[in-house]
Image (cartoon, rainbow, N blue to C red; front, side):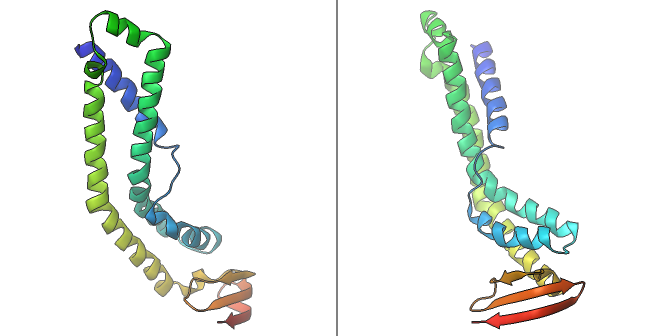
Length: 177
C-alpha cells in the first residue's frame, strides 16, 4: 500500500506544481494589475518597484491557482490511471478506490492549509503593502505616473491627457472632469 500511496501522491504533486503555473490569474489583487502594469512597464519606474509589485500580487494569484491546479492534477492522475487500466488492476487485487485516494486526501489537506494561510494572513498583508507601494511610488516619483500620448484616469473624477513627455517636462496637458 505504501508503494501505491507514494506513486499517486508523487504523480499528484508533480501535476499540481506543473499545472498551477498555467491557471488563469484572477483574484482581487489582479484588479490593480492593468493600472499598475502600464505604470510600471511603460514609464520610468525603478526595477525594485516592478519586483515588489509582482511579489505582492503573487499571493492573490496562488489563492486561485492552487485549487485549480489541484483539480486539474486529480483529473489528470486518475484519468491516466484509468486509461492505463491501473485502476482496474488495483480493484482486481482488492484495493478499493477510496484506499487509492488516501494520499490524495493528504495532498488536498496540505493545499487547503496553504490556501487558508494565504487567504487569512498573507493576502491581506500583501494587499496593504501593494497599496502603500503604489502610493509610495506616486509620492516619490510623481512624473512616473505620466507618459507620452496617454490618458490617465486613475484619479477619481479626473482625466488627464499628456501629449508629450521628455524627461521631467510635460507638454500639451489637458484636464477634464
